[in-house]
Image (tube, rainbow, N blue to C red):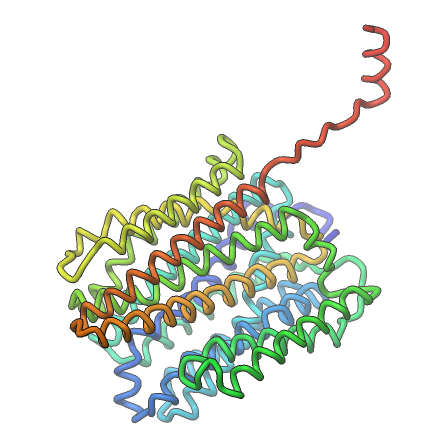
Amino acid sequence: MTTVSDNQTAPRRARWALLAVALATFMTYLDNNIINVAMPAIQRDLQLSVSGLEWVVSGYILTFAGLLLVGGRLADAFGRKRLFLIGLGIFTIASLAAGLSDSSVTLIAARVVQGLGAALVTPTTLAIISATFTNTKARNAAVGIWSAVGALALAVGPLLGGVLSQHASWGWIFFINVPVGVATLALGAWAITESRESTARGLDLPGLITSALALFTLTYALIEGHDKGWTSVTILGAFALSAVMLVVFIQIERRSAAPMVDVALFTERAFSGGTIALMMWAFGLFGIYFFTSLYLQNVLGFSPTKAGLAFVPMALLMAVSAIVSERVALRFGAHRSTAFAMFLMAAGIASVSMLGESASFLDLMPSFAIIGIGGGLTIPLTTSVLAVMPVEQSGVASALFNASREVAGLLGITVIGAILVARQTTALAQGHSATDAFLTGYRTGLVVAAVLVAAGGVAAWIALRPSTAVTPPSPTEAAELALAG
């Protein structure tokens, strides 16, 4: 049980608390992708090398993904509201520093600190929702809104980044966080009720260290593998160290009297299957999202602003369908609605592969709309995974969810990128033009992503399917049946 105030949070204050965590989610998700279209301007102004430019992005992702589980555990132990405010304060100050940066060193350092702040904030968001909305229906609706805000951030990021980099200064992609961060800090301090685990447990420092090392080295290998070579000693060593740390982490958690993560949870069908499905969702959406931006600009000739604008209808439909996903799940069953949503999303991704170099803005919209609707209707996966996690560990549950999605998104970019490059190289060797070669690789990557998302739909069906076990009659019911017999 979470130790919240004895009085139920007033509905009005609960709505304001949801707004605070939604704004924080929007900021951290936005920062994950707003920078991409501004990279040329940053490189030009700061005279960055290609390696330095990559670390402007990678520094944030590496810290963010590597410390998510640590942030979740600290939130459960020391208070989710406290960690929310601390993390948001760090993120806001680092955003200001990033916008003021006049060298690669200060910008990369600021991005690393931003990642730290995001790693502290992100796990608290779902945990605060769980503690604030104790009614299942209200909590599921709040999770739908939280997910919708995340979807909007995915769309607004490239659009806002394109507009600011074209018509203002790249520093404004970071400055924009400052007033929002200050307002969210004030709102969160007033509206959010503190919650933490009811029984104090040790921090499980060995678990914290090994989980952070496992995530950090895995993320590093996925980010740097393309440039350093997948068979290089550095990358193979990083993968090996990540695997060893994961095994050590599992052994530590199995033997710990107060584990950070109860490994028995993975025997729960809803938790393990739901997590797999979530990872497939992220693999398909984030992997394709990244390379579709290249397709729109390098093949179709869209400007950064127009390319960002193309994703807005998809994100709006995703946001709307996320909000209504709970009603759809109640009407048709979560296993049916979620599996159908992922099959729909897979069909949308596959249909993009049929578009060529002459596709127009309007030609993209049917496929993007299908992806958006399908992506939003998968939200019952999140609520189902969260529901089987002990309430006192909701911070770790949120961290597991976000870490799984972050790593799967990176894996999607990595795998689809490797497929794209391999097919592109073969096509170039066969005499195809650069555009045709890119399209060959891009289409293959789309098909692979669609197949994996569809596989996630199968996992969702199995994970969320209601148990067929028959509940034995109560003693009273048994007596009535005996009398009737």
